[in-house]
Image (cartoon, rainbow, N blue to C red; front, side, top):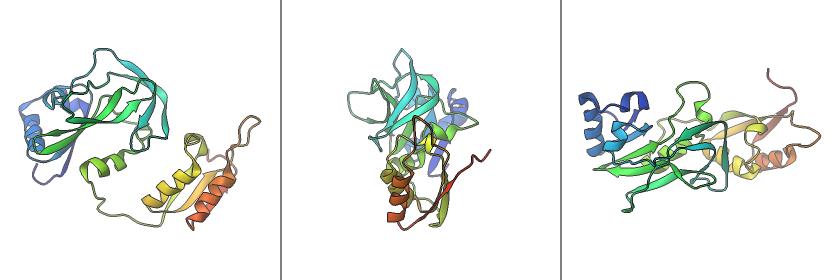
Length: 218
């Protein structure tokens, strides 16, 4: 474990605290950083306690970007974290209506951990549940990307981020090293039209190229 700064232990491996998993716990205690999900023997060993009742989650708020609501196309049931009174844990993501903690960070010995009470998807569009995971690793674990390129292009479907202001999207893309934006240009409906002009102005203020695609890519 000494070679690794961040250890990811998914629910399938964390649910039983076997002798092999004890090494992960010891590594975290010694200063490593651990990411894990789901109610498990590992989460209990870290001191995480969950509420008895589950919530059906379809709207979430990431406290790194508190003005934006994350919408889950497929709702998921999860038990919120019961926050300890001593302040050793901090909520990172909360359910929109109840403000119940769903993702928390905490300290364990000399190390740190991030815990997701909602089990992360193992396939498909798992990234869509927590799109700011990399930023979470940077802010909590001090993660530094080993390599990055400042000429990245993104393909943007406004239907997936219509709740986020174009100026904030442009600022986020600038931070991530985006150079060009290709936006889906098919959202012209009788009752809804995306503000493409505002998006283009926000991108051009960052000296980027922006292109609208007028047909769906499927």
